[in-house]
Length: 336
Image (cartoon, rainbow, N blue to C red):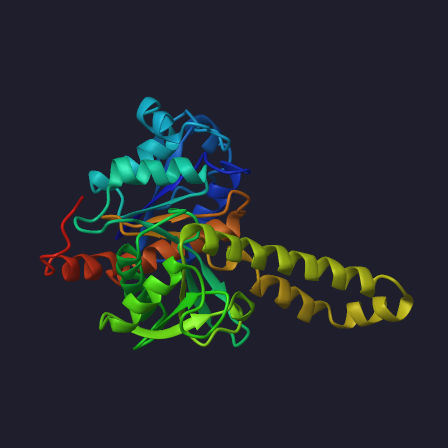
């Protein structure tokens, strides 16, 4: 059995949606069992089916607006997030899913789970839908606001393995997010990354990709520093929501539009579903010893189900082990 740990108290709708998502996952995924970490008294109000679900009492909740995440992780050892992350070190869980405070989760992952030996920087990596029905891996979506080009090489390699294992892409192409497609575009930093990627044999480098092509990319992986990629991700999310509101506004402006909207209701629902972050489940934190999935703070039960499904797939396909096996063969990957 694959053991998935769920931080049941982190997020906007905890623990109700986490519990409902866990029960949905158990119903649909036969080879998993789930550990729910949180306030046992509150969790029991929503847990109507305990099949392959264990509850581990951890009453403290690290707040979403925590200003000192490192101190919070070190101080509140009885928090749901800390107990969940610690379960990876004891093999009580094979992967953890949390929608708790992002910076606290990153800090906790570094302190309690730790980076793979030789892996210099972790990366938050959400998956975006494409107009052709596929997926694009985006990184780093906020773990490192600034980073060295050589560290991005490792991150891109991790993304390559993820794409091969989870999306069955034999030879994933990596694109560098930039302000233009021509060689030599961007900051000095971008130019250094471009040169390094062009010379590597770790993966197939496509070249520069402009942000306007994020949903219709010529590659399978898009990478930049955490500041840039985070802006790209939030711009896509904001644009999708804005487009939806504009479309609704115009459809509701007159009788003809209302009739058209009614006739196209199913199509509009599919459009909304395809752009929903809950369809993917969450963003994997690359570079740790074991998988940690960051679900959105506003995730509902279906989002948590998909986060658990995603975590189980990562464990099942041995994504982290494959990367570790490669890094262990590289003598120049010395830890800091």
